[in-house]
Length: 298
Image 1 (cartoon, rainbow, N blue to C red):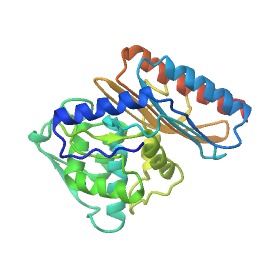
Image 2: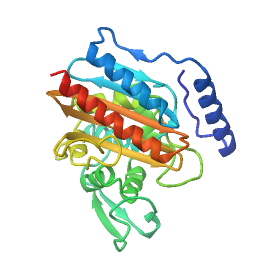
Image 3: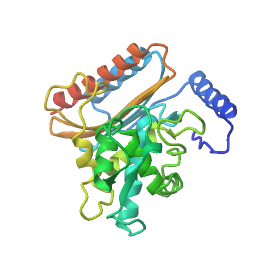
């Protein structure tokens, strides 16, 4: 079931539609999508993730693909979730594509003014305005520091319309950028686990265009800290290129984990949780279970 949210929905209509979707999907018996040729190690991992999802206290969506072996497993993967800061990945992917094909100037400086100052995460909040940012610096701040001011000037430059058009053309219709950070007014930004996972697969396999003079999306994401979600229990030095996001009732973490000579794409999204502590713990255990499974399958 794929639902594309329209920006013309009113705030109350959008909330009602979202609640109906979640209720219908929760009431239904959802069969996880499992690739053929599931090994014993993968079957064990699936069982662990299913158990973890049941204890997350929320609606748990999951996408997993082993880039090395091709094994794929998904859970509630078509359910649309508010994207939080994970939406910054498709924003940067769209920027890179438009720069590479010459639709946007690669030497553009982004002007940050007082009106761009917003709450939430980031490194620019205390900086005196106005000032200029290079595109590469804005990308690095948006992905590595989850900087909302840098993200918003990128949105002004790229436009949400261009992002949504690009995601539609790439085959990821659930990914929609409809507002800036961290505006609470509707419409919301959306994605499901399936589309975000497939987009990350292109990032992981270097299928995303890289404009001249810029770092790849994967290289930028590799510099992000492991964070307090999927990466919480991973050993020091583990290679995990990732981006997290959280809102009042939603917590997500997505990325490319490399361990045991294998690389895997992971998307874990938890919505409408009853306990933030349990939801966060579910992400901690998910990351550790995947890491252990990769080492065991060497």
